[in-house]
Length: 386
Image 1 (cartoon, rainbow, N blue to C red):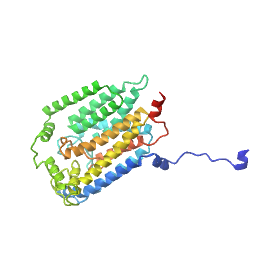
Image 2: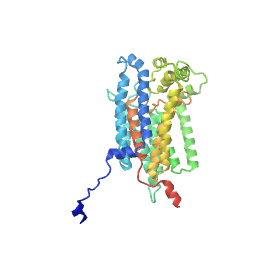
Image 3: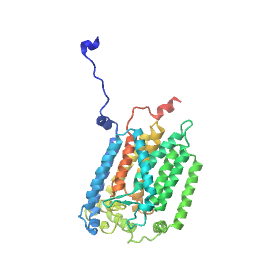
Image 4: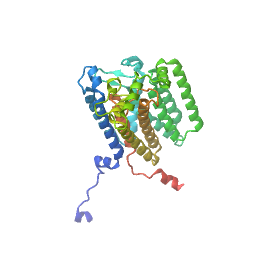
């Protein structure tokens, strides 16, 4: 009768995707990522022209490529943030499988580009580093396994994830790429700790890492050279660490001025591994602290959201992705100020590198997908009822 008088009521098909995405996404973290990318382009304008001149390219050749790679990375990030956690998990499983096969094939078809470590596939117009894409996939897959092991009659996910982690670390060490191997092992350890790992096991793993490092030092000239360079009290000013340390000292609080820095003419990796040294020299400590604040904001907001998450898989995966993101940034900057041995690791969204920035876009996209607001009670609601 009501329909006869007033007509039928239209059925709501649900909130449109874009408004729902904008309402539920962590806008502060998303904004920080875009600002980091902007800072990276700004520093690329300063750091890359000397390298372009040495290689016979146009002055802003590498900046243009970085803008293209970065645009693709940001697009991949935004698209990934729109996915549900279940779809993100499926994407991670496929990506992990493909990246792992590519990692295994590196000794047979990879190249080192004269850097002494076989880490890339050369495509002619670009190069792909499988380990960059492997990291986010492994974190999500390991979180899925560890989370499943907490269920009643669940699989031995902790042991399975540890076995996969050790296999990956072994292949990375063969390249050699001890920096990425350490990051993979760290990401697994963080998730295992959050899942309630016994302290004795973590201590045993730490002892194993020390033993493996000792073995690598005695058997790998590449690894030993970097450790010796880090431990020596006399820093050779003609090395990359020497140039970087001098640039940071020269920059002071406000920097020497835009375009006035000299370290970019001496450092072969000024636009990648030591981009923060360029920032410190030309723009000073203030820009460095600003960049650190951006990374800290993303990590802190993500971990705060994960503390309230009820789903074990989402909580573990989000924690692993956030900590891996933050620690990679910390390692890159720690190397530049000589707090850590040289690792050959990029600064997320700031350093030049196609594989690095696209893989990081996917990784942060997964993280932002996990931190989106969902209609659920918080974990504190469950604990309060017990």
